[in-house]
Image 1: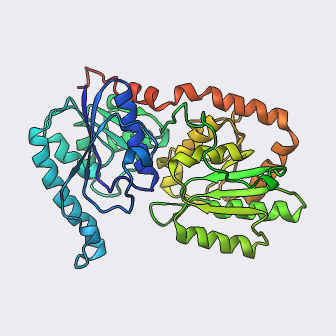
Image 2: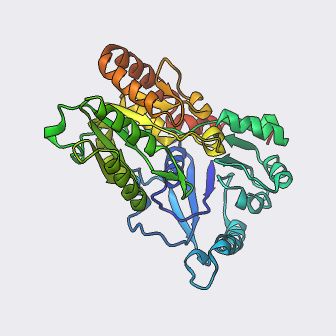
Length: 387
């Protein structure tokens, strides 16, 4: 099939959604489809091609549509900039769609969905959040798609409550490449003199949606508790942005931790990430104590799938979306925000290596179900009755 994936933000980007888009497009192309990714000309600090930046095969076409970049226009008030940019991009998109040849239009943002539906081409939307306003039009637009991909089970339940046709909805979390860690280390993350200590790692953005803390504070608190109790370890926190890295470094210092206890690397290129996993003995996915829908409904963390592929013991905050993926047979769970519970799991894993090994094997056995190719194969198996 000819698939046109329509993005709506700057690309490439250091944020996780950029990697997810790149992996989805690459997986569809690997399955034999002809894939074109369309994105707006919004300024990005990344100068590398997306194929090199995300370390993926150059197996799909990337087209940038020229539009007004209000996000970087000095005279446009920041609260209005996105709306201006999207108005300009939708205009360019309508013109592009007039001559584009596609069997499937694919997107992950409701803001451009009405423009795609007017083209009368089978459309798939992959939802990573749900709108707070305009729910009636959102429901109508979803019911105009041949498939609505909900990232999590809680999201599917909310879509049903909103009135989206159940026959159109499927639940598919994110995925991982099976070759993700099947390569020699590209960089030395942990100095050799520290390798006699267990390394406890976190890999991923330090915040979500620009301001939402993802729980690194909880890891720092757990590290401080372990140090106070005489445990030797090496903490490894990988991710940006830089301002939050600096904030967490200050928190760690005030908690009594120094550079021998925890290292903050900042953002690292995708091609170096496998080395980080190979440096860790335990991998942690935290979350703050919160009722925010991002944690309870909208997130299917890329890092969880990468943790599974890395074949390392996983400790994760007990969130409903994570339960779509893992269970007590494959991971350890702690209450969001509970640094004491996290610290207890770290200590337990180090004292029970056989049990830790059994769980990481169970997590690794799930990977064949969650490769990007398998995921996209399921999504693109479109029901003719709905189409």
